[in-house]
Length: 391
Image (cartoon, rainbow, N blue to C red):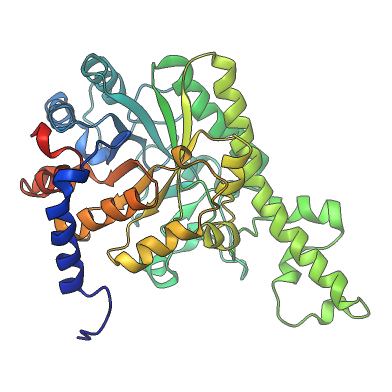
């Protein structure tokens, strides 16, 4: 193991301890403090009671509660099937959360996995799942391989999460708008929190419907643009080919942004004080160019109220590098900094909090509740960074 790295484990712990000793005179409360709550934690009233109690006792202000995991619902829905992971009764996790968290002044954001539809070799049990109803809506890579034909081990090899819906199919975005519309109309949520609001990679999406739409506009099948041999474009100037490739990139990126705009407008029409946020890739350049997730644009144009960069790295240097890449023209309050606790020790996480503070980011979100609840000594260390005299 190399020991000369500026941010080796020993260096991180030492830095955290130095910061810890200086906290007494510099401690402050985060303006907002939240955590993600994964769907496997909300299957019963008892488990939800424990989450609410933990959040209330430890000064959390917001919870991002995962109520759509894989094209399903952890709430009552007429649009998508009830999650097969819930008990076969009338229990409504989202309603229970809202009824019991609001009296404790906790804000509840419905955390929605958007384009990611399935991620297991075991197929959905409910035949009304989109997996069965609309296989033509699913994503396809540049080799023409359909995600639905892959095994889970294949996704691990290509470093993607599973089967995605295609953002280039208009009916997909219409469906996702209906998913959000049903929630904001039927539940008194404080926010909608979008996850997987992106492509799995920039080598997607060559869904036949999307290809046809692009070809109708530009008279070129985009799958030809993905082939290194450009003999198909014999006689065409290189700049023209390059321009077409840029058009194809913009076409895919714009499809995500158009959905964001429609969701923004859907929430506005409810006239409810619901905020729209997105969990995003922490490097805005990578997000825009490799996943077509143009979240800085969404913030600048007020399409979303805030973004949560999933800055989960355990490396302090990379953590700060990601912060420094964010456009300084974006107001700091529009960024809630996501910090991983599942993959690093408490002093390493404490360092990330102080780095966030030193760069002006006072809103913090931890991934996830499961780790904080299972390690009793973890969060007491972190909260020393918030207000030492309070405890």
